[in-house]
Image 1 (spheres, rainbow, N blue to C red):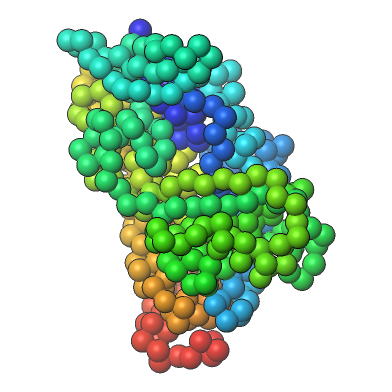
Image 2 (image 1 turned 180 degrees about the vertical axis):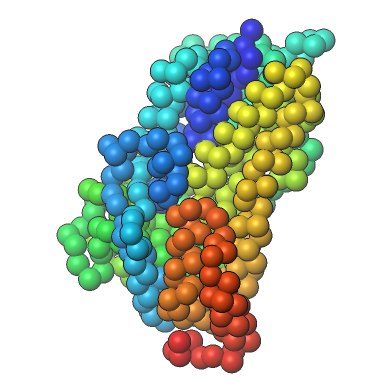
Length: 392
């Protein structure tokens, strides 16, 4: 009998498992292993500090972000007094799983099948990877951290299988020599409808390699062809391709994360990927942490209603940021004309400072109210066409 079984060993699941075992609970971590999620790999300083990420997991330190418009306009935004860390998910996820196991989580490798109940007993069924046999584990609670197309969510949570998805694809390439087109300390974000009609493309340095990819909600877009076009326009067509990966990414948090009985969701399964930016690692790990806190509260009190704490705790901290980023995506990602205006707006020093303060610290900054007012007027002027994109 486990206190909790965590289904999925990505950043959300591994974090939830580690937090629970460090709180004294008996935890099983079920992961199918071998899967690498396509991800730019950016992690902010707050994540590095809050989750004690060692330096050897950082394969690059980014000090500049370059925004590129449909017409090729480039805006470089320096990161003041710090850096954004980069990780490679093929190494980062196993590191988190290993750390959870070292803390006391019991690892099981296999594919989740279903949850069944016998009276008051809850069993998680899975197919063992090594033997192919169906096995089951008993626990008081289950944390579903099994990704955007979560089978736990689909089976156990109302509307759990209905969240809209962006389809992301990237190629890990051997990094070229530093040049004007490629800087190993700069992330390039490409807002161009020819690459993605409703999201963006990226070139993110990973030390000896780089992640080049894009995402879109439009199913008719050929992801590989769009990425090939991005590589060509970025001068990276001739670089060796090391890996190719694709996966769905949720667009918005689910309205409910628990079944009120014995299951709660975390990470992509709960839909916690930031709108506009597509940032997921930090929010996944926070999702794992609040899921662990909710299960801990349920175990301590004997009340399954405590599982609802996971969503409440997350939204109390991040609801406003998600709302603002969602509004920005709705406003600027609909056409190349608007994307052009968005990149133009990024020239503004107030926009740059407040954006990166919010990203680095994961809070909307309220320290400079006049700057917020100025940004509001500038945003309105760009959206209504009162300012031409070339004028800042």
